[in-house]
Image (cartoon, rainbow, N blue to C red; front, side, top):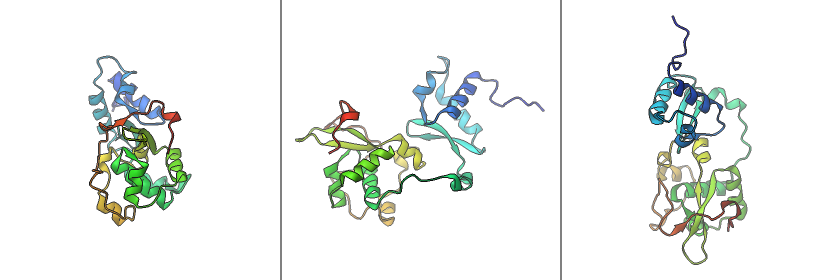
Length: 210
């Protein structure tokens, strides 16, 4: 029996495997393509690699626009004793995060309209610090309010391939994360581009969070 690695015959596949194993965060197709031969079919290579690892202790999974190796779901319990959550989100933060996830890009006023209470500055600061929420831009209305959305880190942390994998609103209400019905003016946006009335931030690092 040959000891040759099953991926060895394809240099591009081996490069892809090495890049994904070494990466601290999910990598996009564009990031991977930059290190592969010009004629490499990244989609085909990713599919082949995912199938190869589908029965292994780690799986290749998609997280938003990126790809990463993650522990197989049936083995996750083995690592739970090693994990330490740096912060437990308050109920207000969880409610705010859920609303942003389902209605992004959303302004603070829209979030408050759904929750029925004001959003404290500390609550939004915590969500921004976790890396699960980011500034999406500014709404083209008087006052130019900032809009918020989720990040790829949010998808990665909760094991979601895309926003379309979020649980239904009834599931969230059953878990106590939403207690009111969202207004009709805020339809669900599972693939949330900036709307016609939104502008991207000119400098996200310096945007006012109010």
